[in-house]
Image (cartoon, rainbow, N blue to C red):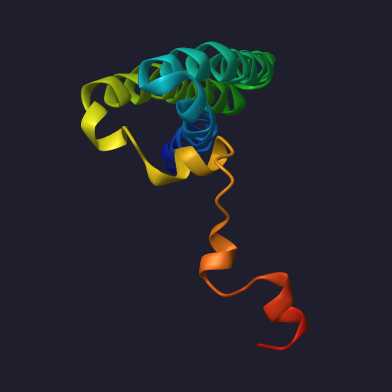
Length: 133
């Protein structure tokens, strides 16, 4: 049971962090660094929290089962809560603390629609592909 709950916790933390960071990258080109943190936490954080609450309620329903299932439910609830805390507290704190590392990423301008298409730089434009180059 502990290994399964550890895997669940890591998987949830990674998944939710990807959602949060993807939203941060999208919003950074539009709102700047601090605005992107605010928007990503308020909008994506709401979805992540709703997902966590739903998982906690579903796992808590297994408390009605025999004792072996109840121990799994306790582990699952702890895994979900720890993953939620990691995603909504640690990730935004790292974005604020390491501003120089996350600021001005090249992909933020591309997602904001600056008109630059990197496929043309790589020589994979439609013209080259249609000619077999």
